[in-house]
Length: 93
Image (tube, rainbow, N blue to C red; front, side, top):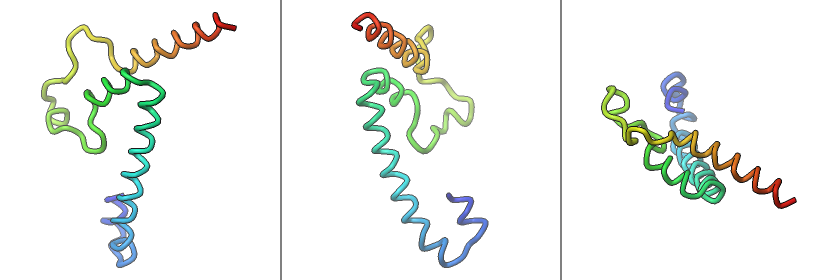
């Protein structure tokens, strides 16, 4: 979005930039609520580990990671929950 504004700096792109930013942030919040409803605590852990829209400065400079050593990655936790949910739904049918 910002690249578009910098590449084509016209009055129209300048006027539309704040509109697009607001729409993008609203969409991100809606999708975040949906992910929380679907994945629950796993997604809450993911939210603590991964910034929303702007990367953390420490991540860009190779600073310390926010997860604990030996802890499953969030992606692994979500995949294991999906597998567990699938297997329990198959057992119920």
